Image (tube, rainbow, N blue to C red; front, side):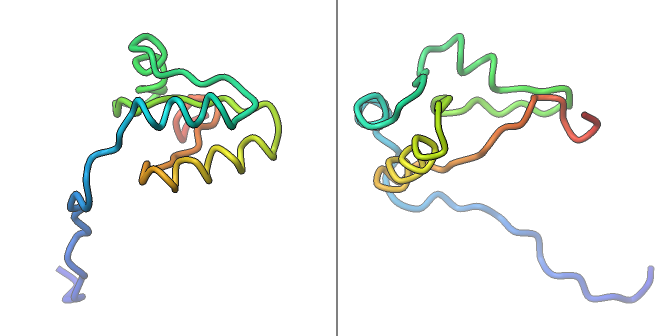
Length: 94
């Protein structure tokens, strides 16, 4: 060992109530110019990429404009929903 003191790993603890997915989907549909997908098929399709990791999203938003993306983030924040942008789905090896 090198003798370096490493910090403890970051552990995510759930904070606050779970996200109300129905209210989130309704607000996104109303306020975002783009596709709002909360169906099981879309969530499954976006849960994986070319890596070995799989994380099923709460929902998927495909904004049509930069302003729509900004609005989607604002809606997610209002509902306490995490946001993760997605690239081409090719993993880091892309």
